[in-house]
Amino acid sequence: MDLLSQLSFGAPWLLTGLLALPVIWLLLRVTPPAPRPQIFPPLRLLTGLVNEEETPAKTPWWLLLLRLVAAALLILALADPILGRGLVPPTPGPLVLVVDNGWTAADGWSERARAITDLLHGAGDRPVVLLPTASTPPTNLLNAGEAERLARGLQPMPWPGDRITTMAALARWKLKAPSIIWLSDGIEDGNANKFLAALKARGPVTLLMPQRGALGLLPPARDGSGFTVVAIRPAGGRAADVEAAALGTGGETLSAASLHFRTGSGRAEGHLTLPLEVRNRVQRLALRGQDSAGAVQLLDTGNVRRRAGIVAISGGEQSLLADSYYLDKALSPYAETSKGTVTNLLSQHVSVLVLADVGRIAGDDEPKIADFVKNGGILIRFAGEHVAQGADALVPVPLRVGERYLNGAMAWGQPQHLGAFGPDSPFNGLGIAEDVTVSRQVLAEPSAELNGHVWARLSDGTPLVTARRQGQGWIILFHTAASPGWSTLPLSGLYVDMLRRLLALAGGAPAESLAGLTTLPPVSVLDGFGHQGAPGGEVMPIAAKDFVKTEVSHLHPPGLYGAQGIESALNTLKSNDALLPLPALNVERRAYGSIDAKALEPYLLLGGALLLLLDTLASLLLRGHFPRRLFTGA
Image 1 (tube, one colour):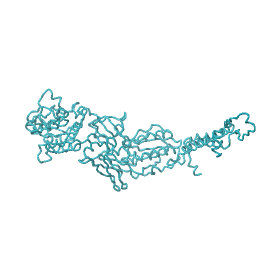
Image 2: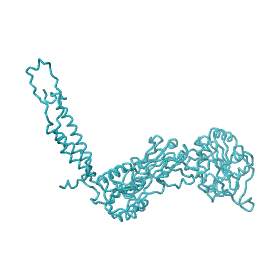
Image 3: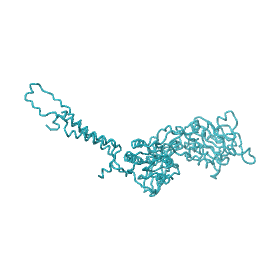
Image 4: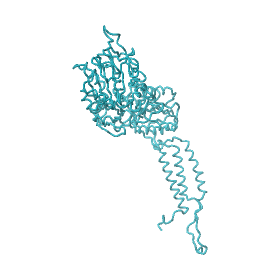
């Protein structure tokens, strides 16, 4: 009796088909099996022929029973029998399944999917409300079959869940005596207590918890030998090891390192060591064995580190006044920087050569640099007191001798702000900081061709950055100094962004492609499992000036944005993110896998199919289609 009390049916009305079993029995009983054909010999041999076998006039009782049992099993299977009710209380109210399906639920999603299926099997004919926290929920009540079809299509999203929005969705339902089961990811988002209170206000709540918490990978820190990587998890767990890997464009492993979580710790750190040439082939960093968007860090084209050489004269020994100090700080996150003479740096095969306040290039260095630019090198020059006294021919435009003062008693005017970048400038789309001012600059000689060489201007229209294509390379001049003596530009983030755009020229990116990056369209995106694919139609471009502060969402999933070959990476986790475990909530907790509801439908269908197979074999035997010696051994 205990076993029968645990038996329920998802479609009990189909059990009425059992009433048809007597009719099936009568039909089978009055319908004899097909006669077995007998090939007669010539008439002269019929004398004395004794037929030892006769075709039965009715179906044997054992075959009738076989067919009736097979029909009964099929009817029972279609009624969707469930043994045990698991976590679903035997109440008539609707079943509400709240499913955390953000990226933190991706690893181990299969056990969540099984739990949803088991819960829906145990729902019987009760209405169901399915509420995912990271995707749009259905707007109408569902039966168990409809809910199961929708649940099969439910997937983890590559962004965090939004429990506050889910609370608002739940509030729109007018439910009487619901049973609520929260399939959680075990991660605190700052709203867990408020969320649970909203659920408990509706009805009794059961919380399902994963056996282990999610793991994430923070943005790497680049250094001269590779990447420093940090993995995070909810604090309080046991000691564990996880492997981080650097992967190439084809998914090949270029380097790997083991990260160790100490007991109770939520962070593990390691280092991936790669030479520069191999490092430039890295497309992503990932935690092995963790299928989630948060366990992946995509790298943008800034990861392809160019070799940049710096030749600086101004600043002396005081580092905070030296041009080379500010240039190195701005370039080092995206390039391998070194300092020295022109000859020494060119021998190191640099892609970018930066000359800070070098007025006239001495001796045979000038033809060497000209050849470097002609073959695709990028020459970036900065003004200063030496440049103001006169420059050589390796400048984008002719310069006036002397400098323009915009501050002090003898100044021509007040310090100037930056003007808007033009639509043809590689800096187009970068946000202009209002607090950046220029107090000294070197002016260009006016000419009809000047406007075609200007990439940035001051608010009064005078050039701040000019450029000229020469051979396969570029000559670029900042008309102010590389250090803060002439402007506040080197103290701003815009300084870094401008130099980063110029580094992209060294990678072969056309200047017109950079000019078009006012908005960054999606190139590829990650799904919740961290797999990269083409973006859907709902994914929106991101304004270049807002890219750094953009959070991942359904409109902006993690992925690569920009133009092909000069993409910027938007990742699920940022440097200051952390994973926190759910607090000690006052609610019944169960682990995934503890649901004991068992669907009997597949077993009954299998049993019915086997019985029908036996029926077919028996019918063929009775009709004489099998040689008797197979069964008699004669």
